[in-house]
Length: 109
Image (tube, rainbow, N blue to C red; front, side, top):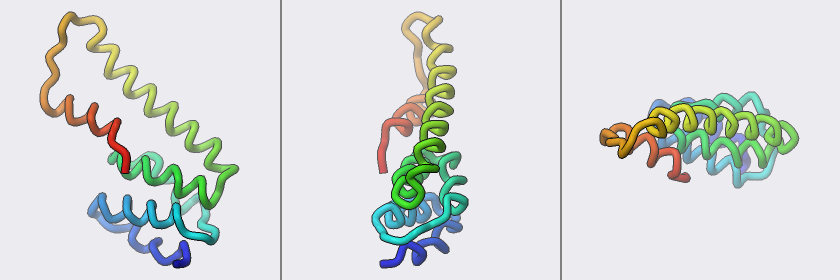
């Protein structure tokens, strides 16, 4: 399969579709521009962000080395900021929504 075939699926509104398309792109030969993949490194869904990294690395490894590192640094800063709120407390109680966000950071596509 040519890497260009799943590109239209990146515009789908269902998060699972772009995620699966990015995973397919990461396994396909060809050359996809960084501009087609880069926006997904900042997607609100961590699974989509995670799928974008290998897709970009497959097709634009030099660019991915920089952009994926920057994306991971942003992720780390967000998690550290959220965690810092709880470090100052004793025995923090997390809501289910907070637990879901934390679990989402550890899920991989």
